Image (cartoon, rainbow over the protein chains, first blue to last red):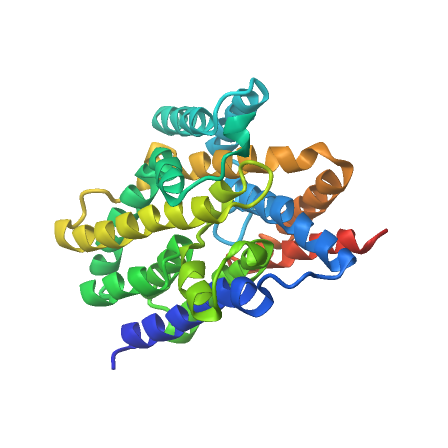
Length: 102
Length: 220
C-alpha cells in the first residue's frame, strides 16, 4: 500500500468518527443544563473561529491583506440585511478586484 | 406564520444548497487537479473525497505531499483540521432520527456549509443538513473526479475571492447568535484564542482550541 492510500484510510476513518461523534454517541439524550449551555455556545464560537482563520489565516502567521476589505464589505451588506448569498458575492467581488489591482 | 411553522423537507435542503454550489464545484475541481499534480494519485484523491468529504483537510494533505512532507505530517494536519467536527457534530447530535447505524451514515452529511445552512433559522434542522450535505457530496466527489482528468485549468480558486466569500458566509451565519450577550462574549473569546494561536499552531488547531470558549456556558 502506498503512502497516499495509508493517509486516505487513516484520515477517512478519523473524519467519519469525528462527524458521527455527536449523533451516534450523544444522540437524543438530554444533556445536563450547564453542559447544554456550553453546546449552544459552540455554534457562535466555531463560526467566529472560522471567520477569523478564513480572514486572517496565513501559513502559521496572521496575514492582513485584501480579504479584510472584502469581509468588511460583506459585514456592511449583512448590516443592511442583504441575503447571505449577496454578502458572499460582495466579499468575493471586492476581494477578487483588489487582488487584480494590487 | 404558516410558512415558518412548516417543517422543511430534504428537498428544501437540496434547494438551500444551490446558492453555495460554486464552492464545492470550484474547490472539488481544484482539489482533483492539485492531488493529481502532486503525485497523490487520481484514485486516492477520488476515494478520499468520497470518504473524508472535508475540503480543508484534503487540501492540507495535498499541500503536505506537495511540500515533500511525511505521511505522518499529512495525517496529523488533516485529523487536527477535522477534529472540529467533533464539536460541530455535538451541536446537531439531537436532530438525527433513527438508530445508530442510520445516524452514523447520515452524520457524514455534516460539512461546514451544510451545518451552517441547517442552523439558519436559529435552530438546527435535520432535512436541511442532510439535503444540502447530499448535494455538496455529489458535487464534491464528482468534481474531484473531473479535476483529476482536466489538469491545471483552475490553479487558484482564491483568485476569485472564494476565501473571503467563505468568511462572509460564516460571518452572516454567526450574526444571529451574537444578539445575546453570552453569544457575543463567547464569540469574542473565540476570536482572541484563534488570533493568538494562528502564528504558533498548525492550521486547524486554532479552531479546535477556540471551541474552549464555549465553556463560558458553565457560568450561571
